[in-house]
Image (cartoon, rainbow, N blue to C red; front, side, top):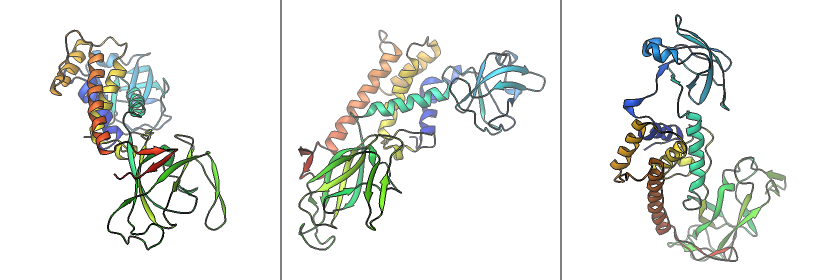
Amino acid sequence: MSTNIQGLIDRVYREYLEPMDDLQPYTLLTSGLTDSATTVSFNGDLLTQEEEDIMEAGSVIEIGQELMLCKTLDTVNDQVEVVRGVRGTTATTHTSGDIIKIAPPFPRKNVFDAVIDQINNLFPTLFAVETQSVAASTGYTLLGSFDSPGTNNYLVSILSAISQYTDFATGSDSTGTVFQPVTSSLVELPNPFTYTDSDGVSRTITYSTGPSVVHAIQFQSIAQGHTVHVTFKKKFIEPTAESDTLATIGLEAEYEPIIMAGVAAQLLAGKDIPSATTDYISDQLSVSNFPVGSANSVRNSLLQYQQLLVNQARKYLRAKYPEAVSVDGQVFGIQA
């Protein structure tokens, strides 16, 4: 399984988009590139003459997520003059040894964007889970602060709230031996939200990305200062870079195949798929005990496979986190 978005994207290519016996031509960068350099030096020994000629004026090459438009090809010195960051991609630095894909049918930036789409599409059928330890106070308790807002704007609802006390009204911390449920409610506040901290200083908490909401929590029948362990239902955090980890986003390991199948189906939509790719994807689905019927298109089969995985994950999630009893926004007596 992958640990970050980069690994997930690599798996999509390896398992769906790039059959090993029908790879697009590629070579290696032989000299590092700044974000403004326009001369790309490549290893010509890795290309046939026919493959090298593809880099003539008007063709597109790819390094990382950046697409470059070829202007002039120098086959003597193995260099090509390019226009950087075309088709909505961003010019960035590249290192000697990086892979150069020639006329890629599935640009990496497209795959990255499709991964974001598929992650966003998982909610509300599937969701992330986060547990926080919150000190009860009179009134509401703000989740996050001006200097450390966290990702509390992605919280959606309370799944459970429990505390370890023999007497909720009084008593010292952790005096009980059994966790008891605590009635609680999640409060939505405007973004940005200004509050007064414990030192009497006016502070403002702001979220510039993600849902535009600030959250607080209110507890009933528990004294100020008692620690409550709250488990929240949470939206998946939208990745912004390939280095983002799946754990940070909130993705369980079993969600990875769901995203991969959805990405492949999304990218194949409306495309004339080469027979080698069709056969390769069919073989991959068969390995997962999901044979592709002759009457089904590859894309439809991918979507059916994805839905099967979603249904399985949803059953597990609902069994582990049953819906809380909620009346007028208050969650009652629910334990994880």
